[in-house]
Length: 148
Image 1: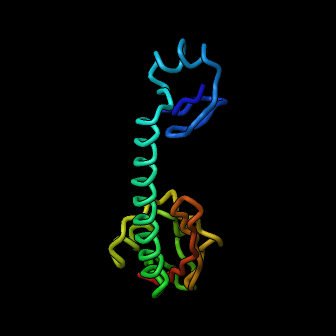
Image 2 (image 1 turned 30 degrees about the vertical axis):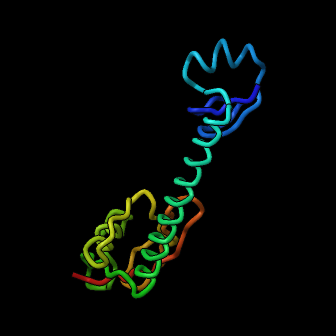
């Protein structure tokens, strides 16, 4: 029997996927627990409509991500830090500081957990960081550490 999964089911598939299971498993477990519905013509049309809406949302999200990437690559983000007389900074630059600098200078809110600094930052200069937007979309940005 073919069913359309409403929720993720272990060892079977994810939500909004078509799955073939035995009749008893579908009628006695999946359908009563509202994990799946029978794959009839009406439900298949609804599934196609959901997939079209999902594709449109993903295309819009990808366009927004590309727009953000273009803005981030325009110019380096400036991050200020307290420094000693020799140009070494006290402590090091963190992803939180970079996220705040991006928010203040570029106007985009990026979660600090998505920013990965490639090199250890202990001195003034220009460095690179990687930003992961999810779905395989990553980019490298430059940030410049300046003294306060």
